Image (cartoon, rainbow, N blue to C red):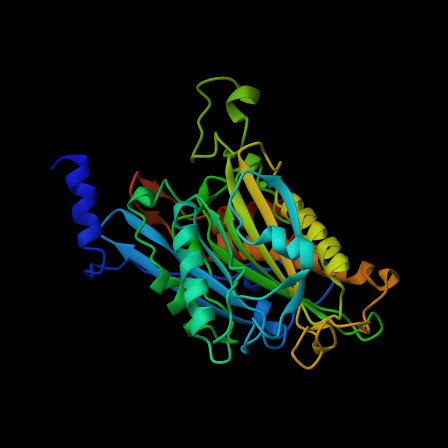
Length: 393
């Protein structure tokens, strides 16, 4: 069959069910369950972004034939009408080789008015269309004529037949409608179904930190879509080097050195979504987003030229939402945390981001896809390295 005909056949059969591989993390442990617990702060009860009250996550996973490995992950700041009850938000960019729709309005107005949807690179338009359709059909939005849909991506084109563009608006809508406050499934699921991190299988990961009472008692939750490379570090230990898989290995050890994975090119991307119940202004949410990138750096990312590293941070606090009852007319008075209260939140977001990445790797299973197979992170070998460095709890 010629390539064009093959692609047409795939598109025509997009909704045909096929044999499914195990999804998410199957029986693989989360990082903390085996002693990998970075930082000094405790997680929330779920150790997930949904520890922040009101935040919901929904996911749709597409696994078809031997070539489609992709999906959608939707994050809702709250379960109400986001178009009429906007939340303050900030955006940070580590390296801008990516597609994150909706950022200019977030930076201009400092708020989010739709769910945040993650998918693959070529499916951002479809995801945006789904967000727009969902928003326009939401009760109370009959007069809405403008929607700033927020959609981000990483490129899953190694495991996924990305050019087929099988993600459709209805998948984004379904992910939004499936969203709930449970701990999200992690690993090869949703928007992380076909991603690769540090040469191993990446995916969706989440974590949280709960501040003690004296610094405010606030919660910070993080969700990541990991699909980037570099020199994997776990708890400060150079695990990638110890396992013989890291960026620039050929340059350092010479051509012909055995590379066990696919991380000779550290391009790729990472999407980070940060939620907090601390009453923050958009400006301080942008500062919080900046610190999440330090957490990505702790895992070994050099934020290379071909990487799209983005963070969206928002606050769910009622005091800082813009609602029909509190429109921006005349002088607006809102009680927000001062700059001097931000440092504990900075620590929390760095720790939660680091652990979310570990969870995305620990929970991901080996996946066979369009152009080959990406192995799951060898957890026992990682733990052996960490024990040697006395870094396990």
